[in-house]
Length: 173
Image (cartoon, rainbow, N blue to C red):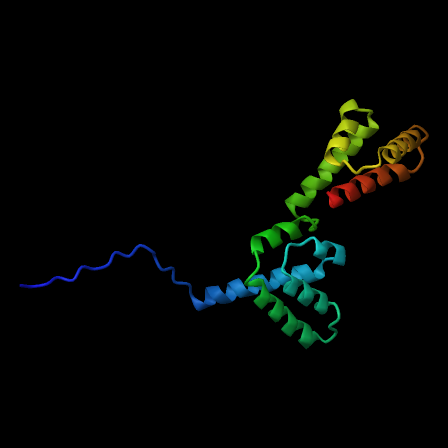
């Protein structure tokens, strides 16, 4: 009697990744970590990262030597391997003025400001719904003053203040 060995079916395909690709992936994580270190501290606080990575990013600000910064960025890249890179990347794009997400947010705030200045009745209710912590009395005063500035052809100080206030509300949202 001859016995045949049954071959075990391969359910999982093994993906072979080259060493070069691994190096490129690590470099990308280091660059992403470097972008985090370039953000302002208040922006860094809003990036979803572990406490260990946050400590390493904070430490980067205290390092002065070029060589030490380079080594520390490598360490940050190593820590980035355990992080959710996509969530971090999406968070950073909100702060990057060249990104589409930042531009979209910027245009939405501009449109809301224009609606407020044009006395659109739905604009005030939209602000109340989107930003429940908004000081509506302060916002109405800014709108009145901006409308007065436009009529008198004065510099648009309150016009800018409305945008800044809406931007602050949006960041805290």
